[in-house]
Length: 75
Image 1 (tube, rainbow, N blue to C red):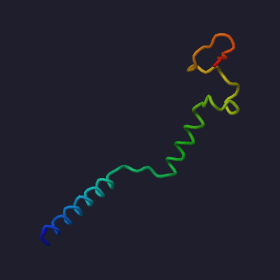
Image 2 (image 1 turned 90 degrees about the vertical axis):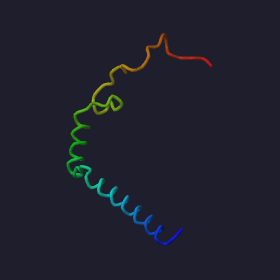
Image 3 (image 1 turned 90 degrees about the horizontal axis):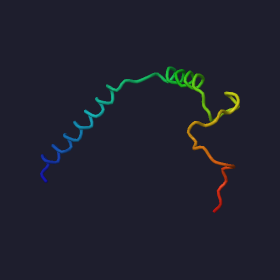
Image 4 (image 1 turned 180 degrees about the horizontal axis):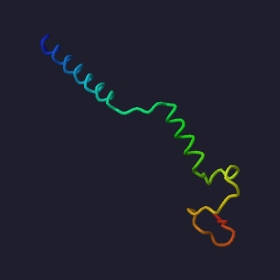
């Protein structure tokens, strides 16, 4: 490889990196305070059926398959 070819390759890589960095600058950002507030509001307004101590008594899980009898199985 000649010096010119190596220099051209380095230049191309730098230009590609520069383009990727410019694309990252265009990505919209949300301030952490706004993201935190949004997450807190979501957690307070959305019921989590796996935490009955927070939301009251446990309701039957609508996603489980109904079992006949005691639900035990022998292996």
